Length: 108
Image (cartoon, rainbow, N blue to C red; front, side):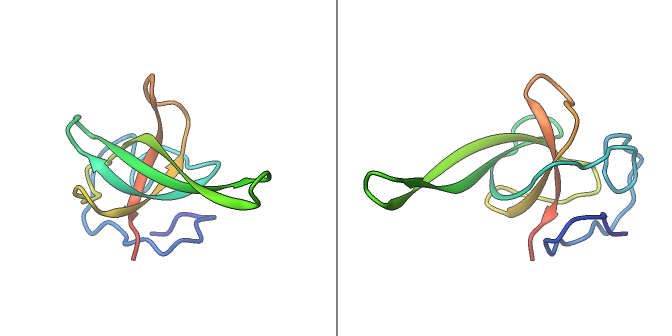
């Protein structure tokens, strides 16, 4: 199964799940930006903290600086990730107070 509009090569989940908030087997729609980041923490239940790097142009010095931000993302039951993995994260509707992204899978 392939998500429409995703241009990143993602390892598809091998197993089925009955999670309602899964973009592959449930009713959760992925919309907005798709970002690639590194999993920093998996301590919360069904949630991951993903660190995303971006470049910001500083006009005064005519150079780019690296910036990092952390996103909270839901991890569906069918997606296997561990700390340190590079994953693709898709934007969704708000799932909790600070969770508005879902992990789509590991980036190949």
